[in-house]
Length: 175
Image (tube, rainbow, N blue to C red; front, side, top):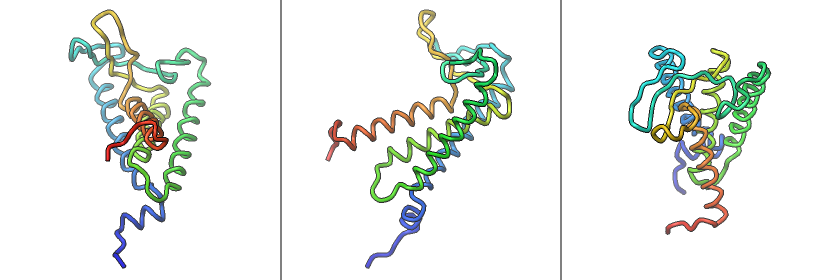
């Protein structure tokens, strides 16, 4: 009979909750980067880093891509509640993950939870989300500004899709 490792005990008893360390890293990186932007840039101030990337301080009271940014204020509570429900659901999902699971699923879920909580912290502390990463193609095309939390949510969603495709056999695996 082989010895059981602490990771196996945690994995069998608490599912994949140990992956929440990634959520904590996302929250920390998101909050530190936003604090740095708030401390160094005025609202709408821009700093060009590359011909296709600038740092621009923006305040977003809405959702992704400033959706509902100009609504009367009810959206603040909707998005805050949504972040808390999503994070609770993800935590339960991670706790229930048992057996052999690829790293894509818990990593993706943890990135989404960290991003959702990072933006929720902004909504509670400031009443808006600080966005600052502004990608563009010269002067012809501008992608909406985003932040570290938004990037984590997007990467997490991509990992969930990839995991789903791999699990369904639609993407051939090496081996």
